[in-house]
Image (cartoon, rainbow, N blue to C red):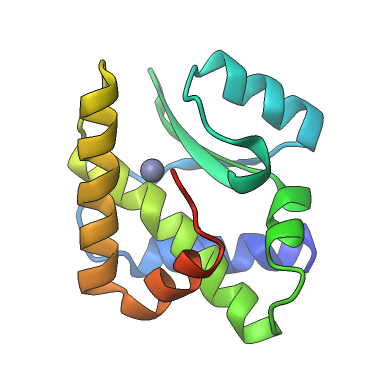
Length: 138
Ligand SMILES: [Zn+2]
């Protein structure tokens, strides 16, 4: 799937998100730069299993995506499953934005991820199930 189609899905997902959040800025980065940004965030995530992440900036939240990692993780998926996957990773980050939990310790990070996981499962079960398939540990 190309970046333009991903962007359409991501924008639709943000528009349909029921909670009141400020619209994040979207950015696609090539894998090298995505990896560098991820390191700078000190998120301790596994690069190959991290298709996107959110960064809180002064001007608002930024969602970073990597087209190559998304396509790699979903290479065995049907088109419909790819769409669900992109919705799922986006909803995951939107729930982080909605929760506004500032993480300083490893324990807080685990709590924050568990909460988002629970909410995604409760409100978006189909997208949650698809993310489960690639066992995201984020
Ligand atoms: Zn997360």
